[in-house]
Length: 466
Image (cartoon, rainbow, N blue to C red):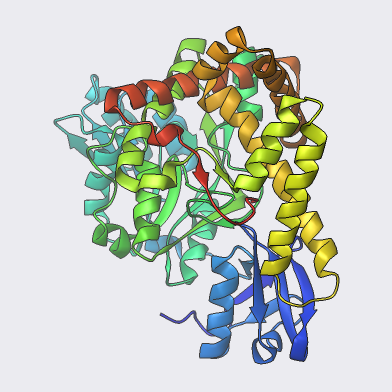
């Protein structure tokens, strides 16, 4: 399917445009990191870092740029609100539902009551807001409730908004504009933590500053291995026909159903977009037990996702050279610096050989190798502190080197926190507890399934860098 005429993308500012032989162009960047050569005829279609679809050839160029996360769509028009139905799965929590429906005022809304313990309280809120109620006699879980709502939708597009999420109709219609690309089946905004409390508790402040549902500020074509590898089902907009075609959410999953849907769509050849310029607000958990319990539950879903999707669930994607360099740096031994330098030198050699003949190729390869080392350090620190922490703890009891690596990993993680969040002592404490709860869930799921796939990194030959 061709993109509509006039569809325009803009090459990202962090992508390098380098001249190539014969008046072509080489683009270096994207996610995962790559180089793409445009022949002279294709390069001529790049004007002021923009490419507009005019014919089949320009459509092909735009697709390559979007798929490689080298460019983002621009100038998209919101869809007509009459073409969008909002499905809200709910089970009890009428106060949350009331706030959700207040924010959605003016939208066509179907509330799916997933066998509430007090269905009349939910029905009263739905009546007051003039929404449509679909009561279920059996509790199907969020995935099944969304599917039940999807079956009732008569519009071209559907939005899924959880009952503890605040999303306004204008944002949803602007998000649905991503579906102007006929390959895009699903799109999600940035989901930020939210609380109305004048004096929120420390863990609530952490969840506002660093919600695990907030996937950063970088727009992305979503797929395993990219900067954004999944989307939370807290707030999504999708193409009804395509979602029905793939069977909607996996009704047998109580956790990870959103990840599974995204990956099934990608495997079927559809595109999924993340647009952080649009935001929805997710109510944070009100108790430490509920907050940590949800993190643990998220972790337990990893094993089943690994069974269904294989290496897509890998907690890290590393090249052997950069994995060795990162481990050497974290070890902090006398041989660490020469080992890291040797790995970076080898990585530079590999990248230089992969790049076409362009000016400054060796210098660019060196910079990319250093970038790969930085990403490897970040991933390996996360492995030690989050995914593998039970093994890390045991290793620390037996090895001084392991203790040194953990201290170095804590430094790396703090630097990441300084870069990505509003860092306070409570933020750093929250990160540690978040890691412990999620990691415990991963190991619990792995033990239940007797599979360590969700704990096993994936090694690749090229440099790993998002």
